[in-house]
Image 1 (cartoon, rainbow, N blue to C red):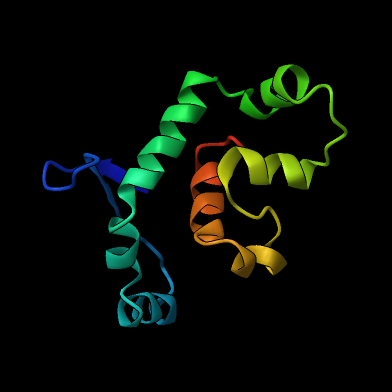
Image 2: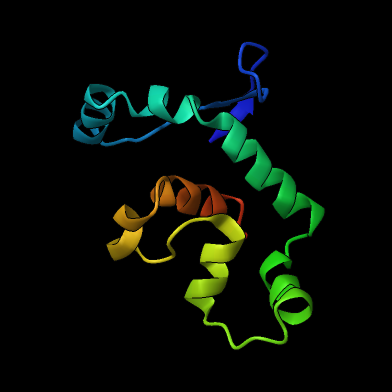
Length: 110
């Protein structure tokens, strides 16, 4: 996913890996890794927020911050991570797939 990089302002660098040759070629053709690396500051902010509020970030947000409102899991996810939760809706909010993949890898979401 990411590793420290002194050349990036956020100190992070995204590395995309796949065992599928076609996927690798597509990612290279679309310059996905380069595109993602232009947004590492956003990734760093999201990671900082998740670490500061522990692995129970969504539960804490729902219970203590948004307890006076009736909110769905999709809405909670959108508020917490500025991303869509469902793959069918990734195109509605920038970097939803990017964020979703990172959050899954960190086991913040399933």
